Image (cartoon, rainbow, N blue to C red; front, side):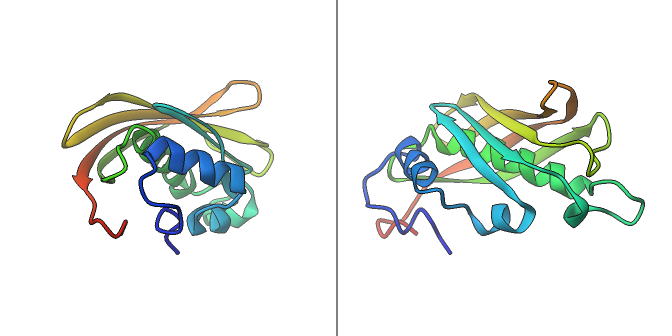
Length: 154
């Protein structure tokens, strides 16, 4: 499923994300891991989710991949919000730091992503995951490749 391809042509990245947020639809990875886009503005996005048993590793905590996926989504969509209609992006590098473990009792978390800078070919973003009390669970920095998309929107 390609949600962007289902949108009208000519929308900026911010407009695309705003439409997705308004529709309530999520990318398949969000459905699988139970998180959703909650806020969008130019250069900033927030995803919300509830880590639970569905994301546990064998040692009884939420798998680091859950946090990494939230952080990658937040960094990527923050960059997406700054794209022109003809641009796309992909993650080149994601550096994650785990500050404390998440468990099913952590409760709702927020992954907030922010663009640090963006140019014609590269974007740099950062993201954090915090709980309802503002405790930091993980953070990341990301380098993203910005490229020209085909006219078909693919």
